[in-house]
Length: 290
Image 1 (tube, helix red, strand yellow):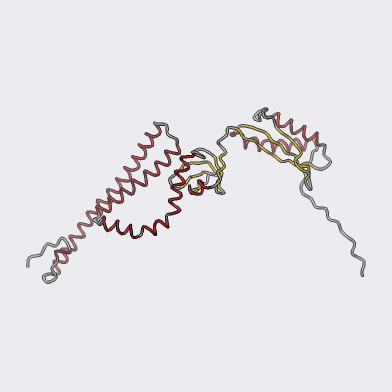
Image 2 (cartoon, rainbow, N blue to C red):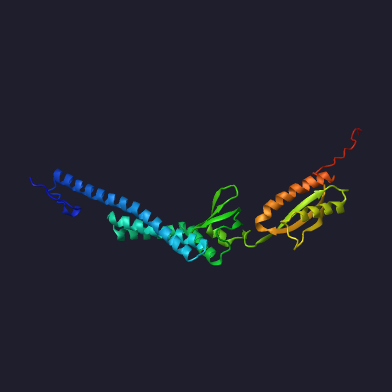
């Protein structure tokens, strides 16, 4: 008996269908799908490499045009996602999935997806707002959303921070665009502040003179504006002195820690004690019986 050639379900005549015809149909479909799948795998691998190449090429082009690093980071992230979507649609077409069916399926879940992705779209809009108003840029040290660190990159949905202890934090752009951001890099100078307590009965003028000497001996501290020292408060266990000084942003933490160390050492040499909280307990005589 001559075998029928079946290329689609429409070619099947149930009245004349034999097991040989069914096997021929299934093997033909399996071979066709295998070829399509192999082509899709090759296209995906080549496509991903091409996307990386295009991203690098566009990055070099934008760098040559001296675009801001924040804009470059954002556009690279956006282009990567768009090209990946195009690649996936191409693969779907090669697999033979009907585009109209795919679009209809996508549309049927459109409302649900929109609700689920509302936060994501807010983050995208936040990223655009950040690029427009530029409250920070790559390399700035910022504090926001309860996190702080150096801005490593600004992506389309989030900003990547690197902390001082080398942790990586992804902060959604939506929250960043709608809340307070502290940028420690906007100004070239920063004011450093200390509060130092001394014991009651200590010679205040002597302590103030020592502090002035410590500050003036550090060449990193500006003379204009000059350091400021004042009696801040009479606390429960100490007389608190407020110290303020100005320096370059890059020297902030080094000066802060160095002056702490100098104050402790010089106060000890000069017999000025830094008190710790204490409590005085008065005992009443309750030995008498009623």
